[in-house]
Amino acid sequence: MKVAVIGAGFAGLIISNYMLMANIDVDLYEEHSKVGIPEHCTGIVSSLTSKLIGDVSKKNIIKKYDGIKINSYENSVKLYTKDPIIKLDRVKLEVDLLNNFIDKGGRVFLKSRIYNLDEINKKNYDGIIISDGINGSLHKKYNLGFSGRLIYGINQEFCIDDYKNDFDVTFDNITSHNFFSWYVPLGNKLIIGTGAEDPKRLIIAQQNAIKYFNIKSKPCNTYGGMIISGINKVNVRNNKIIALGDNIGLTKPLTGGGLFPNSLAAYLTYSLINKGFDILDSLELSINYVLRILKKTNNLSIYLHRNPEIVREIIDISKKSNILEGINGKIDYDLHNDIISKTLKNKNSYKFLFNFMINNPKALFALGDNLLKDFLS
Ligand SMILES: Cc1cc2nc3c(=O)[nH]c(=O)nc-3n(C[C@H](O)[C@H](O)[C@H](O)COP(=O)(O)OP(=O)(O)OC[C@H]3O[C@@H](n4cnc5c(N)ncnc54)[C@H](O)[C@@H]3O)c2cc1C
Image (cartoon, rainbow, N blue to C red; front, side, top):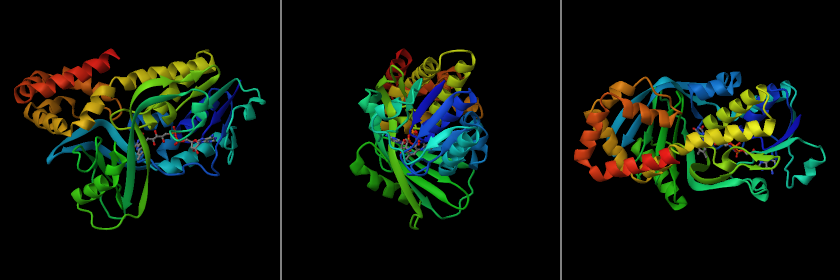
């Protein structure tokens, strides 16, 4: 069996590596002369995602954190995760994934932009995977893709020491617009970044984030791109062509993280192929399974992004009702629906709901309504 993968970003690279492991011949096409560029991603993943990526991920760990600090309008709380949260070297990760692919016998065609699948169809592929990213146009030509919500994202690195053990996310509509901002200490440097639904608000939000964290120096590196947060309709497959990655909105709605869902889809595909399922059916089933998980936090994420004052209230009430005692050290950074269910099953959840009902019944109703919509999706 022989497949073509078009686009060697993270999605194309991870599926190519897993397909090779399943003894499938893979030809990987990439328009650039190198992989990992243009740089855009912060590179924060859970330990689970790092395991799914495999040994290549271990070599690219820059820092580990024991949790995440969530801020909203001067209120904050620290959440401890079960396993460390990991910051990866995203550029080198892609280079190493490509080298691993080549070492294991994969064929790569760099500087090869595919404009039309007829160009490669003569090679008689059994399947074609288009992983051309959010900016790619090829998937659209074959009626593949998604409709959903896009956020403009920016990352700026500052060459300042910070050896803290957690990183911050801030929900406030000052340091971001209908999303959140982030502060990631890396030891000898740090990253400040933000997202904005309205592109006109991106730069001012980033300036506010830099002020909020009291950084006075100039950035030593700036990069960014489109973040996908929330998907409506998705078209994954057109006969023997399947789309994968940002082009079908395969990201976590709350954070826009794409490494977890793509790694999970690739791993599940590999497992199904090994059980004897057809390659393309395995991939389609796996993608749809992961999309279903992601959709379980779709409406709630958008509601929280657009109503950061509710995040402030959740932090406040969580502290008052001791709800964190029951979940701290038990949650996974990537499994957002699991965080919600662990919170609701917590022995103090009744105190949390009661306090919320007294403080802000309207917001509690809105949260419940969004949770229900997600549950029923
Ligand atoms: C600011 C920002 C921060 C982020 N932070 C995180 C994070 O902390 N954690 C996380 O998990 N995710 C994060 N993400 C999301 C993550 O980076 C993406 O989900 C992931 O990189 C998407 O990979 P992809 O392969 O689908 O797309 P891309 O990385 O865009 O790759 C597509 C590739 O296809 C190539 N291509 C396109 N068209 C063609 C063609 N016709 N022929 C040949 N090649 C083609 C392109 O050159 C490119 O190399 C972040 C994203 C942004 C923008």
